[in-house]
Length: 222
Image (cartoon, rainbow, N blue to C red; front, side):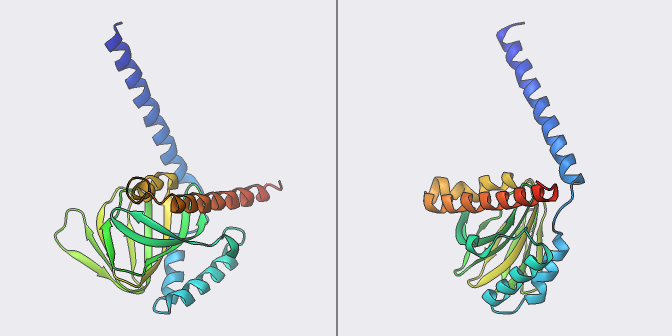
């Protein structure tokens, strides 16, 4: 076998291994038990939609801690962190994070918009205040969402997104969450070069993972 044949064989083996990994990951995501449901988060957010967003967020955090003790970050770890991605800029406050789920508060104090990103995760957002506009791929019209509305972004989808100033929402993501970080951090790495924000983002995600690891091992009596 020549050099070209060996390279082709290695490439074929690598692609086969990748396909097996992806298939295994898909099976794991489909069969595992999740801590939250999209309907639960959307219903909770809708219950407080229309309130002042800071008041709504404080009530939502309290209720989530009651329903999911040990799975919501403590107050000392809650931090509003800028997010630059797809040309837009917002701010997030992470409440829960694992390898397969996250719950966060998100919004913007200024008008902003851009590309949604295309993820290996299903993401839903319920509007607390303001307005959110979405233009779906393959269509020629956009839709506007108001307080109490829930927007669902399925895995693999891409849209144009726009937030009006003062739009705040509750977001739930389910899928292979580390795969979303490439989009979430790309503008920070290659455009703004705001490495302080990069540090804050990775630090709070690490805290979320550690909290979930502690909850997992506590169920085993460790």
